[in-house]
Length: 259
Ligand SMILES: [Fe+2]
Ligand SMILES: [Fe+2]
Image 1 (tube, rainbow, N blue to C red):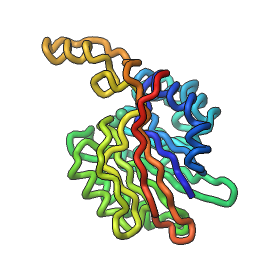
Image 2 (cartoon, helix red, strand yellow; image 1 turned 60 degrees about the vertical axis):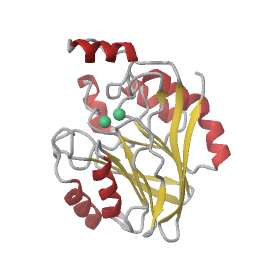
Image 3 (cartoon, helix red, strand yellow; image 1 turned 120 degrees about the vertical axis):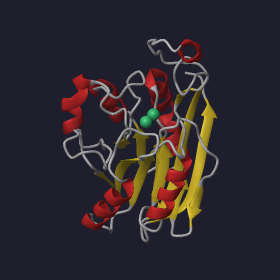
Image 4 (cartoon, rainbow, N blue to C red; image 1 turned 90 degrees about the vertical axis):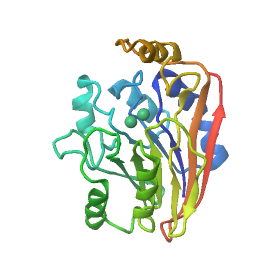
C-alpha cells in the first residue's frame, strides 16, 4: 500500500495547498491512504470542526496531531467524537480524543497513532512505555504508522530505533522543518526525523516573520498571524508491503506551489 503523509498543515494556506493538490498527488503517486498532521490546521492553533471536516471531504483519510490539538476549547466536543483523529497516545487518559484509528479501504488496513516526545515539550508520559503497552494490546496483523511529534532530533531518532521492526513507519513532526534523513531502517520501518510543514515557509515556522522578530527582539507579547507567503507542500510517500507490514520505500516531497 502507498501512503501520503502531510507534515503539520499550517492554517488556511496549508489547507489550500492540500485541497488544491490532493487529487493530482493521489493519482501521481497511486496513493491508497492520505494522512495529515492537523495540530496547526485552524490558523496555527489546533483544529475546528469546520477545518477538519473540510479536509475529510477533500480526501484525507486520517489525522495525527500533537501538543496544539486542544488549543481551541470550542473544539473539545468534536475532538472527543471524531474517530478519524488521533490524540497523543502518551497524554493522560482524560485528555479528549481517540488513541488510534484503523483506516480501511478496498481490503487494505492501516492503523495510525500519534506519540509526543518528552524533551523540550509539554509534560507527557514515556513515549517508549506507551508504545510498548499499545503494541502488546493491538492486532499486530495490521500495519502501523506512528507520527512521533517531538522537538529533539536525538529523541526522534531513538524512537525510530525503538519501534523498528514493529511500526511500518515512524514519521517525525512538530519542528515544521523538513529533514533530509529519510530511510528504511533494517527492520522494515520507514523513518524521517521531520516531515516538515505544509504552509507558508516565508515565515518563522508558519507565523509571519516580522511578528516573530518583533516578539523576539522586544520580549513583548504579540498576536500571531499566519503567513501565506512561500507556500510549500512538505510530505512523504511511504510504501508498505501488506504481506509483511514492512516498509519498502520512503520519498520526500518538498514542493513550492502558489495558492
Ligand atoms: Fe506543528
Ligand atoms: Fe507541535
